Length: 482
Image (cartoon, one colour):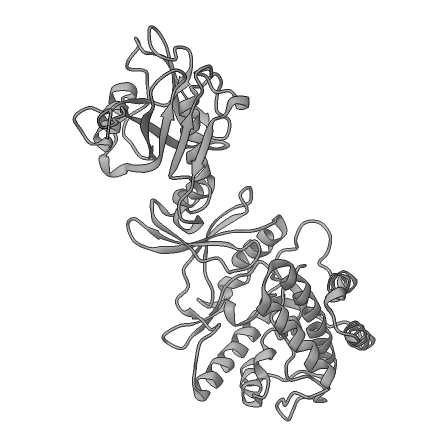
């Protein structure tokens, strides 16, 4: 080795974040006098002395701003490997702080002439490019960033000369969501120690299980659109509390972020659970009882805008999307089933969960069945909630009997016809959505349902049920894209 060991200066930067009227705000100071980058905005910062980087940021914060920060409240934000224009590279440790004592003020007037809070998403100009790189990397959730400027680059940030390169961690599960969502969650439940990505392996699912630094577990969920956010929050505020602990409690909602924080629900998902025959029958009885309680709930608040779509209003759209993927005769089968149901007239809408299937049903250690995930809840015919449960009745009339015993009544002829139509339409929707989203299980379940519908096989239901015209495989859990 020649040239000796390579060393670089180390500096520390404060990212002090507070709640503003329009979102998170960050504290910045304007450098002044005979100092580097005079006239530019910058985060409070300084060089490392004979101390730890945490002690350094605590010291610099007090010296420059007057804020007293406890070392335990200093959180690693991002590390930036930086090279200034015409200078030697250095390493900067940026630390997030959300709790302190005192009021921020200028304390080093020979180096700074102003100190203000700025919205994190609307940073001021002119600003030191190095500091701007650290804040942009922090907002992006990257643990490490590179910022090597060219010799002729300006010290001030220039969007056309942005040299920032992000170095992401192993995956989103380790980083959590974007800073605005993390801030919303921590304002709701306090400082969060861990974020665990528990999203479903499907398009647009974004859910995290969070554990508080002082204890407690919650779930943070981001909705893909305003409609899903409204449906879920309306259900959680409206009929879910009436289940008496049968679902989570809404802790907070932010319509701007399309985010909710809900309490953790005791139990493990029934999806993939292995139970013996007696346990299965007990569980399906409990599922039927839970479905009856949901359907007996008072009507929720009406969503803004147009009235909810009917169960078959999007038939053409779903069939068109799936047509290249269907077997000969499938489209005719679906349209025939829907026409037969429509001839019997519409069913009375009730409160429905909208995605009532085993993955959204949890079994507690005490045998209690609870339900989660309400973004598809809206007034619809009750058979909507049977479509994805009845897939489990294939060759299991005992489970069908247990479910309807828990539900408290069988289906009449009109409901059975609408169930067949709903299952047919749900299958083509699932085939199209599963193909687009890369979900082969969803596609195969949809194909299996259509194949069973073509066979004309019947589903054994309790003797008091009307015509046994249903199919044993009705209800593959396909995606409802409404």
